[in-house]
Length: 500
Image (cartoon, rainbow, N blue to C red; front, side, top):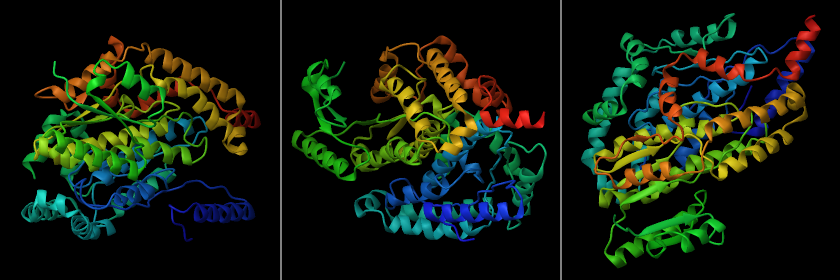
């Protein structure tokens, strides 16, 4: 059947055909295997911005149960868009697995290291195309010699990592995920023994060591440009009237989802810097939105809106202002979240976006190091910000806009329990309104001579100790902890009654 995963009408048409055929034959659908994917190759600054959105449109927004990639666990040079999309989809699969477990539906991800598929042959053309489509001002900074050296590196890595056309290893894992009574949560098919041994150890290595490997491979009062969604908002007024250094602040209106507003803001900042003989030292990306609910609740637009701000908004602003930061050899600070390391119930979409932006930050940090620009992420555990007030209304809104058939499968009692779970998570995780902890880390990332790659401001001592260990736990243990907090949906209760 013909189906483009970026086209809603084609997906709906395919669904109607499958549903009708199943009803006619008296069968049920046992498995969905998602294998659509595309790749774009090159540095973050290279090529048009559309390359990011196209990659996400296929690799993330077209999936339910997924063939992902080892790139979702390890960010590789020149593959930032691809790895960011795969990190997001792995986060999605974790959230989906927990949500579906109560329906006795098992979810697996297939995460192969590179094989000689169609992607293998698209690497060099994609790399060349992105370089050619890069603005001349950016290409001059890197230089043709740098591009030629990168091309040699790309060919070397491609030869090393894509040494086999034998797809049986991948297909066998797909079959096992479909037919096995107890399928694995994660399958990691690889074509060389070294890739079987090394990648699982990489997440345990301190990030600075990974950065070094990739690199070898390949009391002041500064002027502040504070951007706000609306210059008439309460927050904007507070900045100009209550801020301690209001005289050194310029408040600008900028929606990170609007290219024209970003361009207008950039032009103003560049002109102001030239007029005053100054340079831009740091860009702090802090725009963010949250949506609450299970991954199949609410309209699909909620997912794209979240990514448009939390992921593409950060990328738009960073790409635009990077030339100014490169001149000063300054800082890029990206506010992510601990949700980019741990997937929490009812925050699956939010965590997807944060997994993605952490992967993006890893790639950006390595690319900028050669220009002596330092990149840090701020990954706070939830604090009582405006997002705290948005959580419950968001959960309620997504539930109310969910299709009736899906709501019936969960039941009103299940939704009521989710409100309690959200209350419990916020009570534990949001113990303070004191944002000084977060702000102090932001300041350190901007002014410190040797800023950390990662800051994890938390509001309780317990959370300083526990979260770093969670990614090291087997996934089934983490799943079981979250599953223990939940109740059974109506669909499962009804199934149990029918069996009795």
